[in-house]
Length: 281
Ligand code: SF4
Image: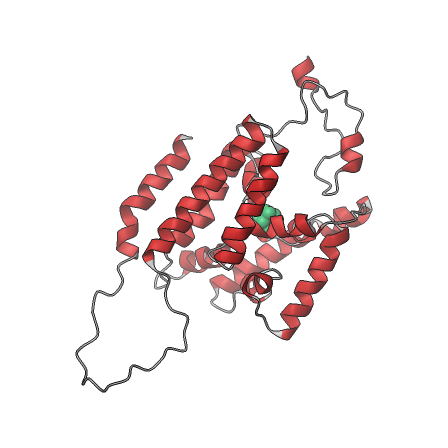
């Protein structure tokens, strides 16, 4: 837990530099002057950035404890619902680590591009947790993942040839998103986000079509966006390969029959997973 703690301390120390708002108050106008209303979204209050960052830390720590220490599925479900309510519907899906890929990409190639520290924080912290404890962010913190799990009513098994083929898509999507953001052309992850429309109850027509199609798909295919599109999932998967701790399947009861592999609606348990073998010796 030392690395996340170090990042949090750095964040707390330098964030006041980023949150320096209203340094120049507006001049005194005549009393009858009417300020025009802005057509742009108002900047977030600094307090919300602190609260969001704190909520992310708490959620990641709880997800790690539920998954690795307490092994509580019920705890993970409740945490997913809370994350969906807070990061999804209440904070309207922004800041989001998935979209932050684009801000980070652009800031790396364009020195004039200013990236808010809270965005860097949201981008990095789930990755740090993935490197230490596996994909705890996906397990119960990401509102996109939670929404897809809620939608799943009748899971069907994706044929392995199709599953293997589609698993390349997130790499393509990640490459394209980084390229377009780095060149300043477009933020496609945000443009074609299939879930934010639900959180904000507002989207353009073609995004509604995409969102509803994705939700219908999620009723039958476990987490289709996570498995076949999410570009952030690629980064999490890379880092989680080196994680110090990871989830094991009922290490003391497993007989290695493979039933769980066949039943998992997310295709997360792979062939050859020798469940619990090491612990039994
Ligand atoms: S794979 Fe992507 S969308 Fe799915 S839970 Fe993880 S970060 Fe969220």
